[in-house]
Length: 262
Image 1: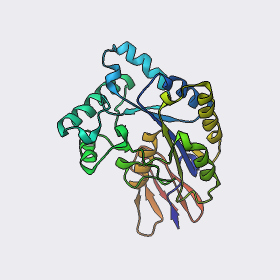
Image 2: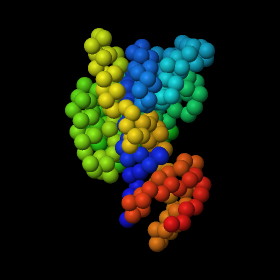
Image 3: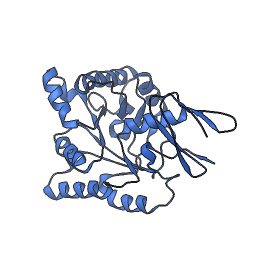
Image 4: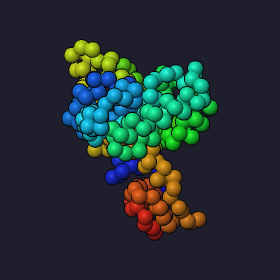
């Protein structure tokens, strides 16, 4: 029997964070993530950086070292009341500025206010977006459609979700803990102590992969691209990422660009 819910280095669970709007608290939050060895994705509005020089953009990018910079539209307009043309502009202008900041293609997003529709999804895809997060809590599964990626919970209810997640034995059907929020909501030292406690409580687990949103997307896509023989004994990995599977309860690594025969 083949199982595909095995992640880099044979990990069985994933933890990821994402925070929206790019406020000043992001710098302190990213420092907390780095302190505990976890990763987060920061969804930013490009209009906040429109007057920055390339030098200033690079300095701001340093806040997010080891994290992912991702889209949140240029000016945070509601997608539900924005014309098609304006939405394309919102996404593409956001990508353009954030790519100058990050130094790499920015192809992830979260929907402003969590609003989306089939049409909004299509427009985002046409703009080169490969995943986009909503604000709808939806348990611990990997997304069926990465363009409507529902998180596990907001940081305000994270403690209960964390306890439930790590108590579950079925990591096959519930492999992902995804916590989202806004750093501007941390207004007091008590708030900061709480989020640090949340991060500390999920960190340092040997069975857990700490990843950004784009890393999860790319790994999942790499697994989908495996080419498998009819007798399920030969596997070819055409991607640039090593992938892992489980065959008859034994972990198997399939290196990038290689064929493995069992």
